[in-house]
Length: 397
Image (tube, rainbow, N blue to C red; front, side, top):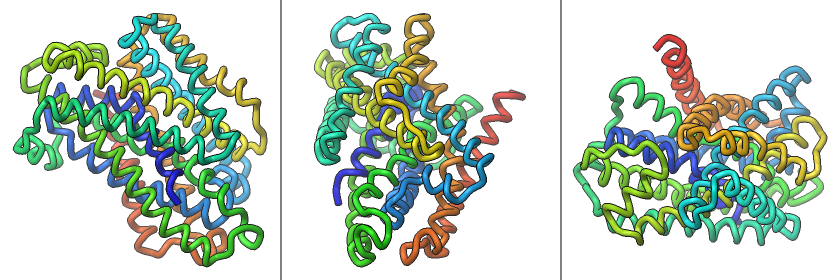
């Protein structure tokens, strides 16, 4: 089963990744490369658990939460998930608007509107069958990866610097803030909810849809899907940071915005490199915005048992992004902070995911082994610990 993980992988290379990885590379060189690698390695088992939950039950994570937890808990989970959805859409629409400005000179507010409309049209493919939407999404993922591989090839590779970046280290609180942003931009809460829906739609409920042996075969295929899809996303994320470190940190040219990255690429590598970057950013903004809106539908219908028309949902989540763009706020700073907000939402998705996937009453023969649950708990504790550090730094300096 190939397809669902490629949709999920788009969320791991959204415009927030462009902002956080480029900022990290330009300010701290290869120092935080290990965070990018670690975040992607943590994302793989998380997405496997989400996909397995859908395969085992035929239901998505929000819907199962509504069935298994008390109403106050479900309402709390829904409220924070909606906040995460808004932060997600902010990064994606702003990123698409910046790309359209770089490529065609469109004003940012107009670019935001265009991004929202095109992303909505892309999401319309899903109503004609999962395969069409997944194929288009996978094609846009290929565009993103190709853009950064081109830039990495033009920039050259510093193997010594990359090796040094594999050693865990920080350099002051700002590097910690960027690390939280990288984590929030990589292990994204909304796509944890979405992946279970994508796989659950293919199997149906136990006893009604695919029998257990078929689910076990799909589980093996799903693992390959996740490894390939998220592995490719990890390559793109690492390439973003490596290019920024190679060009901007080594030349003492820290970038303050995505526009600075684009201009720096044009100055140092030529217009072709800048064009590849802008096209990759546009593909990222369009694809991730459609995936984010899809996830928002899953969140509302799952937690509340209700849904709103897709056009209304698109308009509601688009509004904060347009406020940022029309107000002339710093778009790149909004991107970075939106990713830090996302990191706070991860435990609210991870804890229910671990609780449900270890429960044999929910999962049947696909319930987690104790070692799987232990590994998932380690990831959850690490994320919560980083969030606690970030809260302390934000409040007390």
